[in-house]
Length: 176
Ligand SMILES: Cc1cc2nc3c(=O)[nH]c(=O)nc-3n(C[C@H](O)[C@H](O)[C@H](O)COP(=O)(O)O)c2cc1C
Image 1 (tube, protein in one colour):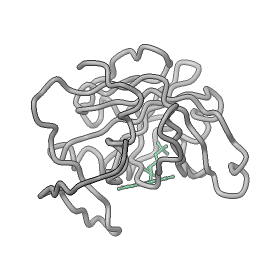
Image 2 (image 1 turned 45 degrees about the vertical axis):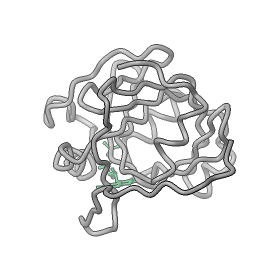
Image 3 (image 1 turned 180 degrees about the vertical axis):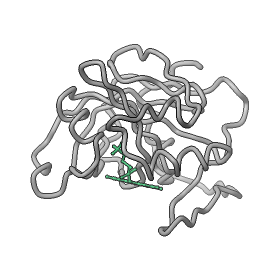
């Protein structure tokens, strides 16, 4: 893995992939699937996400104020769905689903070694937490695989249906 400039974090999340959100607090760690996320700012990168208060991850995220957004390739789809259909209270999902936690640089939550990119984040705004369970995160460090081509990501369409990222188009752009 190599560091990814923070200004490029949006390129990972703009297509809306399903991600694995890892959290840790007071000796507990967890991972859940998440697809309700969106970019809010380029740099410093701000990311909005809904983490339901019915999820064990909600409390770990709120109490620690930190998390890692990990990007799985399509080969991890079954593990992702497993993490999205089990509760981490009393269950070590890393062991259950064969995911390897690795220490992050800036936050206490773990990176997931099997993922091709990871974004270390801190919670910076909880204004919409009570109404929507909406956290605003700031990316403080990002990692990307050194492999030439990133794997295809998966995109949730509801009820267990996923699209796998495919063909790309390149058109003239005025984006800096
Ligand atoms: C593909 C997929 C996407 C999901 N996206 C979200 C999401 O954006 N926000 C959320 O709160 N839960 C989402 N979930 C549900 C959680 O992953 C699920 O409730 C999980 O069991 C929570 O784990 P935890 O209780 O260990 O935190 C998603 C589940 C799947 C399968």
